[in-house]
Amino acid sequence: MIAIQNETLVSLFEQLNISEDNVSAELVKLADADSKYLKDLKINVQNSLNYPNLTKKESALLALSIALNEKNNVLIPVFEQMATENGASAEEVAETVAVVSMMNVNNVFYRFRHYTNKDYYNQTPAGIKMSVMMSPVLGKEFFELMSLAVSAVNGCEMCVNAHEDSVIKHGATQARVYDAIRLSAIIKGFAAIL
Image (cartoon, rainbow, N blue to C red; front, side):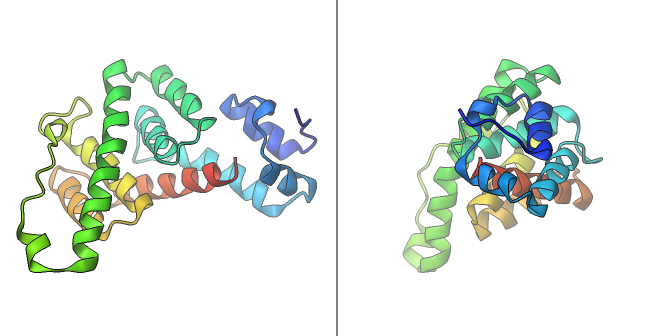
């Protein structure tokens, strides 16, 4: 166990209820250097979980989706607990897991189609079952928003464009989409050094 001496890092860990046992070598480097980035990270994480166009539950579920996508075993329980404390049901948490898995399948498949851009690949049915998309417990708009966020993190242009179009058609504003993507980017950055 590394004792955290940096007030900013201690405060960030306390805010998210992360044990000091989970401090990484990368965070220690930033803390030891009293890095400006560490202060920015704390502010960015705090702000991202409080964007005006997302509820607390939605913010926590989006953060959970990114933690799951990045396989960050420190942040997964943090955001799952946060989502539950803000009213997420077991079914909504489970569907978040499903969205992340499904988007990883789709992001690989549709990036391949996009990169190769050959008629055979583009015209042949995918043959990938996605019934979870038909009547999601998260609601269609939020399901699409989460799918968009994971696709943005995974860098699938086709999926990003399709889900952004769909989420807008389901009533989301561009400001809501923007907040979801900013949150996702910040959590991905945090996961990268935790």
